[in-house]
Image (tube, rainbow, N blue to C red; front, top):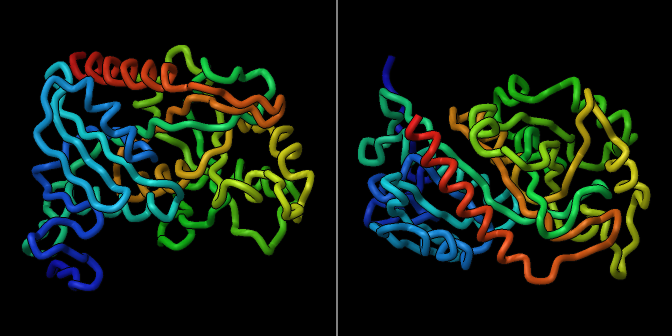
Length: 297
């Protein structure tokens, strides 16, 4: 079968041959990638590296690639939202699995390890602010992005999705929810000592997460209904804005993905953390060390 040549307008490259948004060449990306939202957090990860090979930035997308205790790793900022994850995931996969010169998929597939280190708001009152980390076994997408891709139904947990829709009396005016499981392998390697649950991914920070400033909510009971949802012993533990796209696209593209979030707010108790950086630093170091340990086994 003749290989599909991907047109210039679909696989967009810079004049130097790097992918359009990330500005990276394939050799500048490690197989293990730590994803963060905040561009300033990239240097907070790479400061623990023994050496840095590459530093590339374009807009809010910053990448540092280097070595930590002999393990090659990239730290990369995505910015906020599933729309940015759509860009980042497709371009990371292009770097790993597309011949950028010939503009066609490679014969051999490469699987990337993609670990998101983020901050999040808890949706259960017993999850403490600051010192708690949630490992997302599942991501619940309220954004609708995955439905734009063929084959996504195969990776959506239809039973949990339908249970959530029924529990919420979900409005047909909103994007259709979907639930996707993260990497079981990464969860086993990285989640020890953390809360494990379902992370809800929202398409916004204010109304879509039940916050009220001057605009009232279409469904004032949305958050209490989310908090009370249970499925096979799992509860929705936290809100953030990226994981559903990360999990869904990783499944479709054949990569391992997991989200780990420091809890900086609790939407039930209305607490908000002050200086949470020490907790984020601990998460960064623990994640790097656990990845090295799993690599050595």
